[in-house]
Image 1 (cartoon, helix red, strand yellow):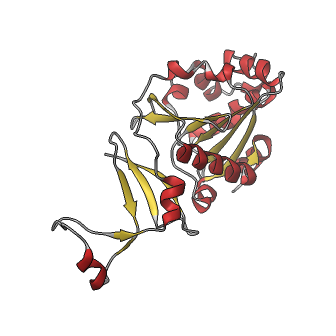
Image 2 (cartoon, one colour):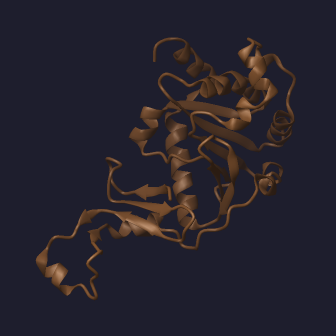
Length: 246
């Protein structure tokens, strides 16, 4: 079963760290192995298969889930949040492409050389315009490989229409995201309160979402938003970097 990175207290982003084992209620702990004979002698009921690691208390306080993992739900169950949120809807996009993009008519128009930024607003963009005119904020940061994949170049081209509708879309290279220790999964964060994490299959198709208001998970998402937003580059400026050697 795949692991989902929860967080780390290491400045280098390696260990100690916590991971969730997807599809279970279990958490995997990464840390320095205990080798002190005096400590090992005090441990109780040790099985031959068991090992022990040391992690700082802060790691568990900050990142260990406070509640059991919730069941995956259809994406359709959370679409109302894009209208009902009060202040900010923030998105992290980490994948190299999305099946929904590749199957769209917009993708085919882009492949044929159409200027996607000149197209009429879509239903999504009309809602962005409606919400942002009331003072709400739609923001997202997209992770881009070097060189950018076709899926990422499509999003750079189509993103200008979203920007025109009122979204603040920024981009950063994957190497920079790794340096900052950003997570490798997609999510929406609504009002710094509700985390909606995407679940994809190996073909980049959205299987569903997992909704959480767990304080540790929401805090980690807020920290990701702050770090990514500080270092990411606005879409128009980032496009110039993609057109030239990065």
